[in-house]
Image (cartoon, rainbow, N blue to C red; front, side, top):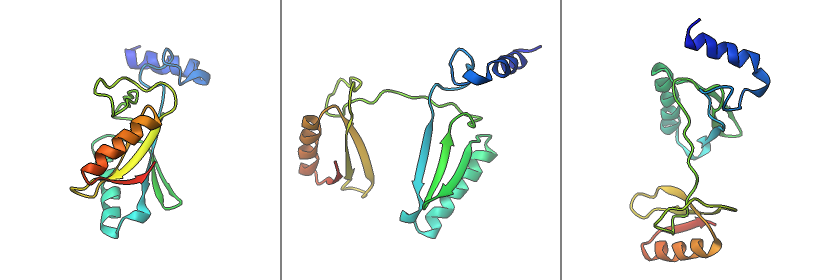
Length: 146
């Protein structure tokens, strides 16, 4: 029995605890769902999303995909193959030392001035978020949501 077969055997024996890291070294202890708002795109951009899915499959990267409510959903969970999920803690962007946020995350969403891209940033407190909003307003960033 090779290493892969041993892992498969271990997974089958412990199927009820599949997400426990000691049970399956090939799976992350978390997952993500990417929701792509297709209603904000024209037909050409929607085709690009489907093309991206096709290219990923052709490159050997697979995961569950679906649609609903105007969104395209990419489930980066147990179904992910050909890639790994790496998670990192969120850090307040107002602090240069990038210390991980402990406790509630205070988000702010902006439109960038140079290309109109919409971005969301995490902050450790409403005070840090307010300071960031002031700095970004001075650089013509548009606050969309906080």
